[in-house]
Image (cartoon, rainbow, N blue to C red; front, side, top):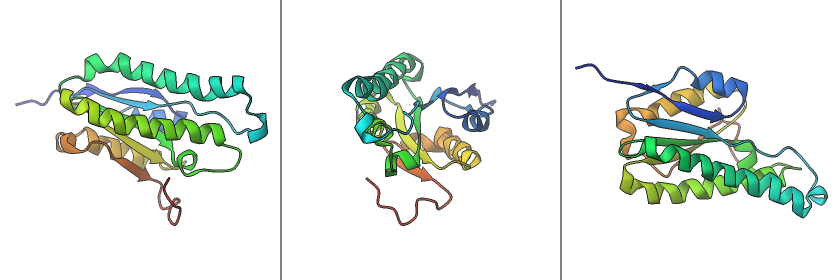
Length: 168
């Protein structure tokens, strides 16, 4: 029996990340979403307008993309969020990026619970720059048939760069 595979929908992310994920195939419908995080900015510079645009609009866009992907994923799909680990773990001048990363992490946990009834797994990979190949391997493992019971996880693919840092 021949196993049917589909290409993986990838939205966002750096060129290196997109390239690493471009050859992935999946036995089930799958989407990888890498939200565009706000750039570095001093906390004092975050006006109400910037907070709305750099945090609110980005999170609304992520949710809208999830809603667009749901019909194709229903039944046995995989949804993987991809976030730079540095944004989730915190760094100077990145309050808005940290807020978006935290929002996506929380959204992913909630979606994992909510979408389990539809057979959709939801996981988040937090990665370091330079770990794109390892990210592709980890995504491939999540998309494999054996990954059907892995959901609601935050997986750090950082080649040890996050060792010793407290997780939020």
